[in-house]
Image 1 (cartoon, rainbow, N blue to C red):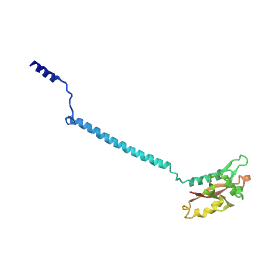
Image 2: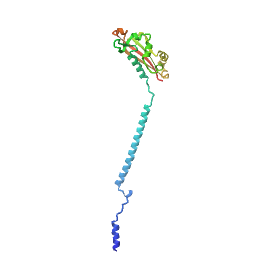
Image 3: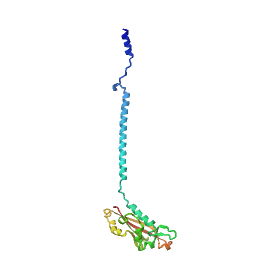
Length: 211
């Protein structure tokens, strides 16, 4: 009798690990678990979406960087004009004392020189210019009359061949672009009469190949 009571007391105080299943969880704990799972799914989807956007941005930037199809014809035209106006070896006026060239001041004695074309060819350096760019410059007064009796042409042979095509409707198909420029300048008769200045317009026709 006492033995059975001892056993009863032992079994009453024996520690047992509780067994918990989802059916016995309170509703607030189940809601918390579902909220965590739902948040994880939404967060993962957002991260995946941002990853896709980043990949597309990288691809777009790489395609832009490796694209070599740029129109450089306008830049070439500007380089030619800058060389002609700022180079002392073209037809710009050069001070005989300081040796300084004055951009926008044309020395008419240089412009009307019979060797002006050759001087322009040697003064203006552009890689491949004999097959890619040519230009013709004409000095005119305010009434449109030609001053100096001639035009000065860089790469004259190529200009003569390509000019009529560049002016036509087939210029794009031929890979040619024709630029027209009119630059207000001052001209002097020669270096010895530097103070005898008159206004003029330097017109330029510049043909640039796109190939």
